[in-house]
Image (tube, rainbow, N blue to C red; front, side, top):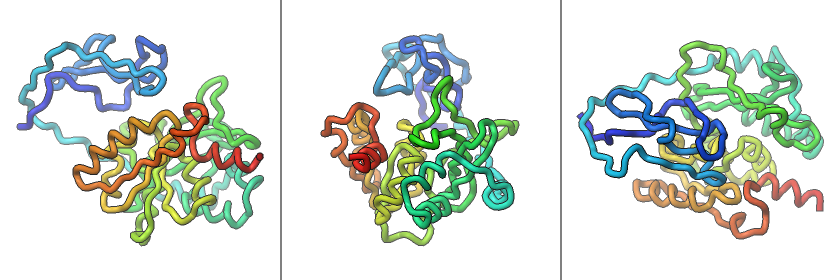
Length: 288
């Protein structure tokens, strides 16, 4: 028996329309014991910077005792699939084209091998797969995104082109890890640098190879569940412009339980627009 609140935010991947901003980024409250969703107005929007809607079911949430339910075991993508896609079933991807236009072939080869960058034509032609491979070298997920070959920007029109390799597989229980987590094997002396975007982690591995670059894949993934496997490492976090306060608050809490995280505030103090990340800064410097 463990002590829990009567109501809690749903921990599944299900998202609803936010009543404030209208985006499908809303996590609803559930009754902890029954798992039943509360009314549609109660929940939190994941757009913490641009929306920040948050509404609890009631002012005084009283704790209740419930039976701890064991979390389902994570599913894994077969290593054979990565092997086939990376070697036998090669597909051109626009993100790699973007890299080749800006960096030496040696640098591009190194980072695409380091992160097992793979091309795919499903669900969109010339898309890129960013594999989430954990510390045990098991594949947690394959995040599929499509990029513009010239600008290197993600395609968001007419809709945001993000999908997952396992999407068509019924019963797949995704349990995400840091993008690039597999690099910790045999690299205990290096500091780990954390960013939000997979693209940024890859680019900074070229610009600043003295760090082990990893990505959370989402601003909300800067949390214990995702970071726990690098607890013993020195960690430097580089949040996007506008996210410093959120990440720094989380880092301070994690440091109290044994983490060693420093959140860099350089970008936050600049005049760059909200949402700018390190990749934007380095790429814009090349144009000057």
